Length: 341
Image (cartoon, rainbow, N blue to C red; front, top):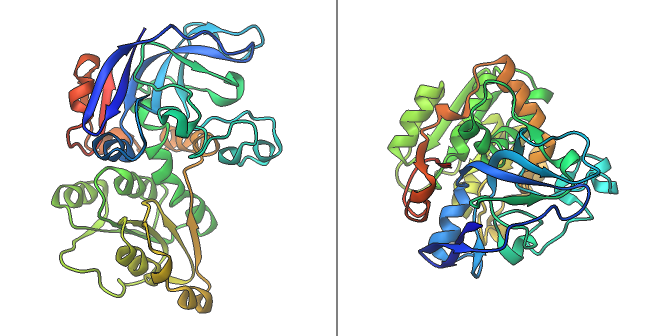
């Protein structure tokens, strides 16, 4: 089969590799139908965050083409979402629904598709076939009416945007949300769409990028096109989301969190430790959360939100390209890119 391989910074190419078989009786083989590019994927491919070569793509929807003897919940022909993290569903962390902490599947960067050895060497979604272990636990059926393109975005980034606001809004229904962004991509916009769909009293969005600012306005946010250095704080909100990717931006967002509010960081702010306003967080009772998105944990909640509200990931600007265009398109700017077979 063919799979798309990251060779080095700015270089991706199709390569041949043996067809995968079900890794054990509990696994399946999926034919990817659509693969979306995570916000981190562009930096990985363009800047070489992880050494190559390795197959790319970890936001995947596809069709089951082979099943192991012990698989009970999936049949050949089923269309499924493949959460980007691997988890077994049976170890103590999984039984606590902390699937991203799975004790069975581990790797230096966490067990994931599309990250090469750093993710455990489990293959990438931009391939003719993808072997998926623990299929009865891991795979989630694509609901009727949800396209393969929309379903692919749910495997990581949409979940990431949702979990930044969903749990907090369940605890404080109708609370106001502040989302501050600066890094390229769609994460902050997915958080906007989720907060609006969940009935937040107001959603404020701050960004330097005029295209994302306009999109956030269209999604229902009260927007601010920010320029210049980050201020000490914005007007506070009980639920805040940092997508700035900078120590100064993160500090600003934390200081913009109301007393006993919750701040979630979706972007990685390297070298931010010394600048964190820990004393202010302590005296004001701020809850700060940073982690990889637990895709398998929150995917059912996002599908339920889509079913009962107008929440639709494709409301965020989405560029769709063909399978053959993938080596070039994967390196080009786009708010959200989806490769469709």
